[in-house]
Length: 224
Image 1: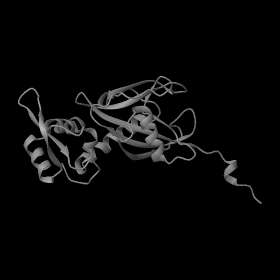
Image 2: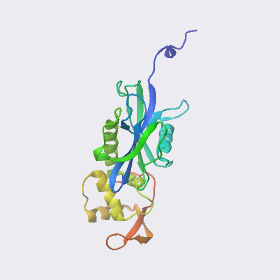
Image 3: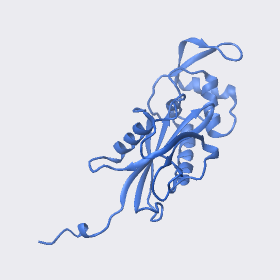
Image 4: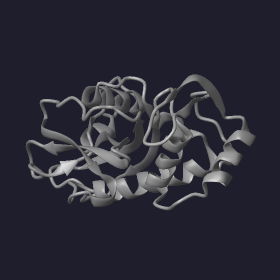
């Protein structure tokens, strides 16, 4: 009987990396960790790790997200597979990248033992990133901006109750441009995405009404 030829050939490792975004102080920020060991020691990166032998990529990404943020039910979607032979100077690694979105107000996360620091840093001014994570960041931001236009994905960045100004601020923070207030609100109400909540929130001017998304699940809908 012939031996399995695959057993004699080297294979790359398979990993997941999770580009975690949230809104903090009105700014779109990325949750980054500082690599503790290896050729990229001291560099910032997105959290990630190798797949377990019995894990699917989705399960591994959810585990990494939970381990590094303490959030177990955040929005998570597969982004792209990065497999350049020189992307990791330590070994041959193919990484399946994910985009994750955390609700406004989420803290800076839980520091895993494999990292030396963790921080929320503005997406527009990221430091030099380890591996090919700068490319992952660009692709994740482009995906997020695109999906703001044709889905209700923004719900995953908001608490249950929010004001219309807070909602528009998030759109503008991510898109990097201003939106017409009247047209933006008219479109949202015409789509039937929001429901009015009891109570108001006090701000710099008069109290603002609170709203919530009728459905906190991904839906295709042309918002912009």
